[in-house]
Length: 394
Image 1 (cartoon, one colour):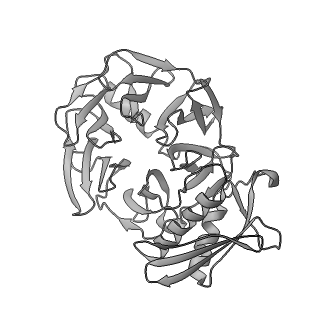
Image 2 (tube, rainbow, N blue to C red):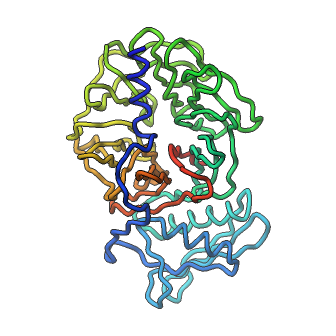
Image 3 (cartoon, one colour):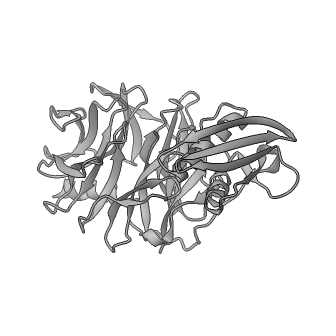
């Protein structure tokens, strides 16, 4: 029972609202004018215009202007039910254009906006607007899992468990979710949902705690935390929850395993502290990753930039987001908010991420530019308290 409480408290620490911070969650814009690309963004469609403005307004490299001075004029035009044309001008001269097909007009707009970002940023950044999110929301009064696009359009409620849910995680192909829930046994078990069929299966349900499940980049393995043998340890199974193999052995609580982009290593948090550690997926010795912070949790390894790991740190009484650069072994706190920042999940460009912004009474999903600290709320209040967003990139 003691180990169960220890691992549950570590898991729940950053998804509860125990913070005493009372600041309002709003946009934090710390972009300097000489570090942004000024763009004029427009569409004849009011709906597409609003979405395009919102998308570029959430990107830390761009600043939307209605004035006459800008680097690019980006115009989006609906040309079909699921097609959007984007025309980019630089000054008075045409610069680039494309007709983009999506799964809907909204999705086509976001794809076209990604095209515009990739054509105009000048530093090789990928677009990230077409990302999809799996999040926890309390619209019904209980925490349930929802999927949506990055700006919370096309929202779909996935679970109807009426029970505490934790940590939804996408499969690499976007067809499945793993998550932890108390709904069936009253204890934390891991479940898998096939999003195509809506079929849910129990992934693992051993004695004790079953939590923190996460797919490998190729989708063939799953890392998780199990406490059935006493101490919460890191285990790895196949994609069906079988061939479960224990990879760590110590008396310390472990949490939040995450695979490296090539699938050869796993980073995780471990007491005391906790601190971040890395090990081979085959098991063996673990190596502490020096971070410069006394509390480190919830690591997320960037698949775009293998040298970057985002994680949650504690400074004073607040949680914030930090990024570790493995090439320099240096860490830097990247969030600048007066409220808590937890649960980072990288977006496709390796520069921005989504995270949970949290005050004493509110929890919202935000986009954070890790280079400038600019933070923009994206989750609507209509979905209740939102947290635990995990990114999938098509």
